[in-house]
Image 1 (cartoon, one colour):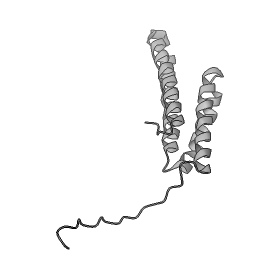
Image 2: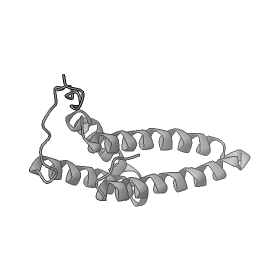
Image 3: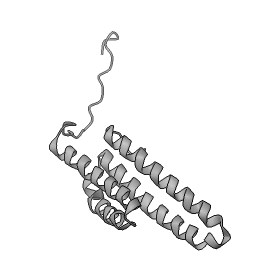
Image 4: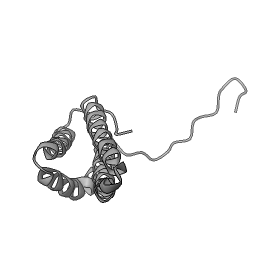
Length: 128
């Protein structure tokens, strides 16, 4: 090889991704927004919409592999389980009065995760 030519780059195998405005990705975004909406409704309606939302997140998480929407489903699933765990812990410890602090902290954390996740979803970014 002559010294004035740069070495040729190695050719690697790649997968073609559909354009960002494809119907499948729009459908995933809409589905994710619905799940975020159910989680938000759960704040006002006693949690039942949140349970429906977590079931929906589990159902579609595998279908969203390789997209930012899987990150959002994972975020929502973890948010549900951690919020449930700490809500139970806070409820048990209310007689010590520390439970009220825990419950308040869980509520603030829950709302923060929903708002941050939804804004990032709307902006076309992953959950992190």
